[in-house]
Amino acid sequence: MKKRKLHLKKKNFCLFLIIILSSCIITYNLTYIIPWLFDNHKIDKEMKQIKEKTPIIEKEINKEENEKKDEKNFSDPYWEFIKMNYMEVDFSNLIKRNKETVAWISVNETNINYPVVQHSDNEYYLNHSFNHSKNEAGWVFMDYRNQAQTFQQNTILYAHGRKNGSMFGTLKNTLNKNWYQNPNNHIVKVSTPFENSLWQVFSIYKIETTNDYIQTDFSNETSFLTFIHKISDRSIYKFPTTVNGNDKILTLSTCFNEKEKIVFHAKQIKSEKR
Image 1 (cartoon, rainbow, N blue to C red):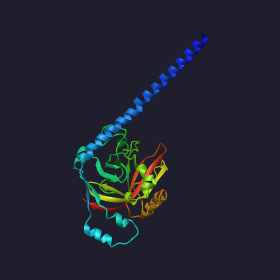
Image 2 (cartoon, rainbow, N blue to C red):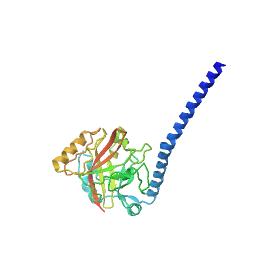
Image 3 (tube, rainbow, N blue to C red):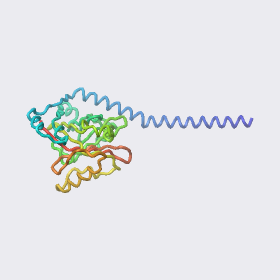
Image 4 (spheres, one colour):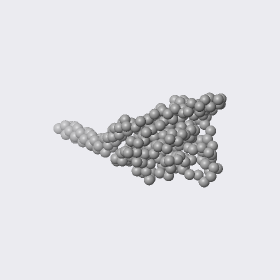
């Protein structure tokens, strides 16, 4: 009899643990997983609508300009990169949908192919999507200190590193040898309502969270060169890219985990006013 009671107690205790564990799993799913999936679904749907209504073309550069570049015979891949076509985006519908639209960015061999927005702070688009709806996936946004009409010495773009690969979730691809050893991936294309431009990557790295790479203005050329040397030395790969005090830099930043960031730097090599 005692053995039976003991067996029932153990059985009831196990059942109790199963109920508690199941309740915890259900609570976790309701609190985190389901909202996360729902946010992803809304972002995917929104981006699909954006792409359907946003004409994007490859704009060829002037043939005479290309012929001049063919006269150059340097090993520096820069002379091949500047022959590449621009990406030109029709912003008319985008600005109607969101007047804070400032650019569109595309990074090869990643999912980064998004319109870029800019608010009066760096908080709003951490939990709002392109259409201003609440969404923890956020959006790709430009630092509020930058000037959208003209790129500064360091123009910074942020986005969440989503695990499903949305926003800057695939920026981590750039840390892989297959990515950074392929020169076809070394050019970032950007289009704004004012100009189209090409950017050549010169530094990519993972770093413990810091704000020392998100400086937008520099007091003098020496200060800027010191900054360039610092971020160049951090790169996990030595890119054949020369950066000097007259260059403009594009910085992409996202979370790798709770303690580290992934940072990507490229210099502007060509631009054309629209």
